[in-house]
Image (cartoon, rainbow, N blue to C red; front, side, top):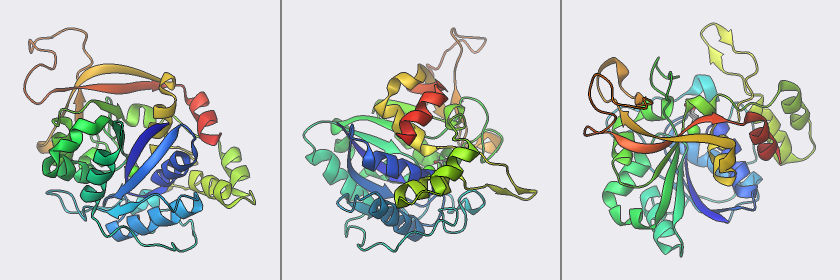
Length: 310
Ligand code: BDR
Ligand code: CA
């Protein structure tokens, strides 16, 4: 199995990713670190512990990390994930606490102690990752790669051009991009493509198996906007980034120059240079700040849903 650690801001679709990762035989989930994002840190930690208990994964260590982005204030996404971060899904209380270590210490230990290189999967704002790579840069030597849900090669969701995870802490994303670790981006271009039909989610939600019912309920979570609830989306979201590790053949990936915008109206945008040749600016992602990233541009959504639902 592929050894992975997950960094999460649980979060409806982070919960789906945790349930998938804990159950899949080709993944070895070594640890989970939590960060403020979709909800406040305490809520994220509690949600993560509850979800892992549901997954039968109480042996997987969980640690609390950054309470807010490096520079920005914390701004949760209650309109997407509900005030509780899980769209109103009520799970039994956790029967254990998080590790006494903070996230960067847990990540350092788990990554360096593992006999083979570990894949670090970021499904949240990248504050913990930036702090880890700045505090313990030696972890990079035992990372196979960083797979992150974040960014977009097209439009944004938090703003017209910025995706939530990168927008929430653009400086952190910029640090991670520059860390010299191989990077794979699972951005909005694919994130918003993989959905489970409403009748399927409803059937799962009616299951007598608690885990299956929770997956159905999470998939049925409605996003609220000032104009009212959106129709059923059924996105597996963050879970898709984990599915792509198990089945890379489901993604069409291109290695492309990427940079994170830090200023002005485009703050938090991932600019992806998709040109085949340099243009009027006479370079193709070769100026400082550009980093080569394996960007997922297309996904076989039908097969990914099959993989996710098992
Ligand atoms: C990302 O933000 C959160 O709402 C999701 O969990 C996902 O990680 C999508 O922009
Ligand atoms: Ca997330």
